[in-house]
Length: 334
Image (cartoon, rainbow, N blue to C red):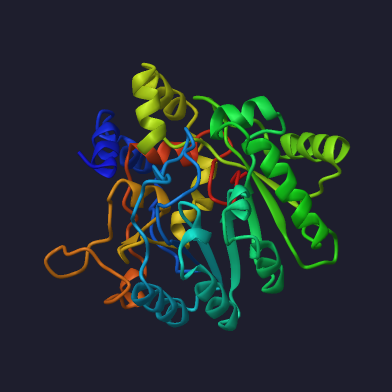
């Protein structure tokens, strides 16, 4: 069984009551337009993190081809999207990463690199910090805690020390400094099956601890709920916490988050060019269907106009984005 199929099977253990909840709230979840194109350029990664909803790792071979990258760029230009959000795996391990960044900046798009920081220390990747700074790429970096013990527990032994060194490296280039135009944001994921704490308070704690302990500065902290899919779902099942975690998400459903859901203005693109409402749907193989025969839409055949006012595909995992203060790739929704 493939990782994606296994994740999908796990997700179906809990019925999808999310559509029913939307009806109770009289909320029509439809695409408003494409402002953000999120591109997953592959599942290859130099780390294997417990919470990873992509199931990425060193052994994964899925990599976006140059042909598909060019099709993505055509779609970005045609859609009028203002932000290109590049993710993986470790997106920088895709051999066409630099090309995608350069071309996206030429289209005058804001470019985000979702970086695990340790990739800077992979052979041949030492140029990356200077490259990112040169193109004014916003770095959104994973740092699930300011504690070495917690980070290494979630992401692997030695990851914390490398991450701290990488953040200092970025700071020396101007990242995180006021007026530099180089944005450095951090991402917090809970270590276990819990909801994230209040984002503003945790950001203040992060800034104080990282500044005092290491002299590190950054712009914003994003708190992101662990999604009950893929590797994290498998962990929950193995520890017999899957149903309990789903109940936590469902019981903390917050209708105030609905208007800020990322699926309303984001188009997610898989490494093979298939299209999705969001990155999480992508990992559950919930591809957008075309108007003829239900065939999955790809970057090679999509007219962005087809997505106008389209109903968003949902599943039980959507409770992860609407629990508490909400969750998105840009952090808390409230």
